[in-house]
Amino acid sequence: MNKPVLIVLAVAVGLATLIGALVWTFGLKPIQDNESTSPRIAEENAQPLAPLVNQNIYSTGTPVMGTIENRLNITPQYNEDGVFAIVDSAHVLNLKHSPEILFYKPNGLAYVSTGQIKAKASAPEQTDKTRLNIAVSDQILDEKPEKAAMILSKNPLAKRLPLSALVKDPKTDEALIWTLNPNIEKPTQGMVNKQSIRIKNKDDDFFDVGRRIRITQLVILNPDSELESGQTVQFRIAPFDAPMSSDKQKALYQEANEGKLCEPRSQDASACAPDGSCEACAPATNSSQATP
Image (cartoon, rainbow, N blue to C red; front, side, top):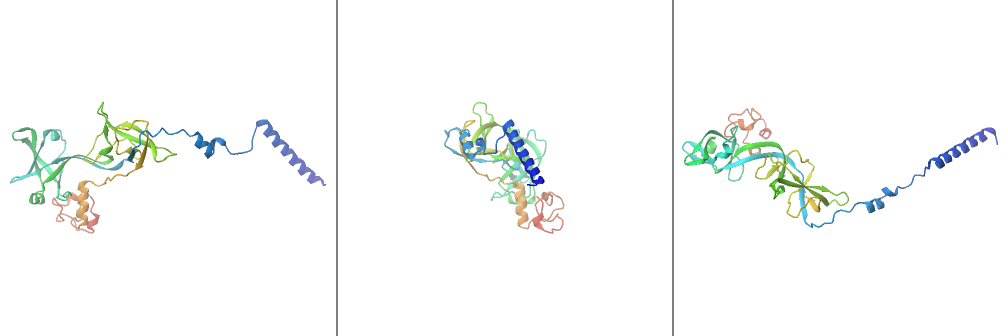
């Protein structure tokens, strides 16, 4: 055997001896399956869910961004002087602005044309009532709609949940919702917890959950008296219908789709003309592009 071959063999033997010594000294072991992370052992070591004492199946959903309008339904009345309405004085006592008034057609769609309060006065022989004289368009005077609503406040960027999700603490009268955190192993089950909230805005269908609730947080939409904090329940995802548009926006879209609303000079399509016609508008290029 020649000398170079002997040198190579000697180096190989030396390296093998060194590796063996390191393994013996530091207790290194060959790589093998970690029993603690194997699927079988992980399943056996997983903490069991709380037993399903409550057998109800709850509907859940996450907050949906959109408009909440705090509306006061009013009954418009008509005489030779125009339009007026009688409301509780408490609703208009501290108003810092002149609220917009929507009028509704028999099919439930709002008129594009809206009214504004032009004067307030005490209602005759009704000390707790206020008479509102309302400025309206000729269209409203001619058609005399029977239903109207006064927009007391509006939040176009509310995190909305349906009113069905809202409950009150029987002891403190505090507003509450039930949040749900799904279980990883059993995705149809989750743990519920009671959370207090402060409601600033709500309308006939939704309330604003505010900043404390994430937009991705599942919330029980049909809570009942059987729920308890820390309880494991069964649930299903049930997205609720929450239209993004306000009644005024719906009316503008409807008029645009019917070709009755031309392209306005301003960003506010209601400034086009008091009755929603195109007489005061710039020439229309595409009526469907009217900005609500």
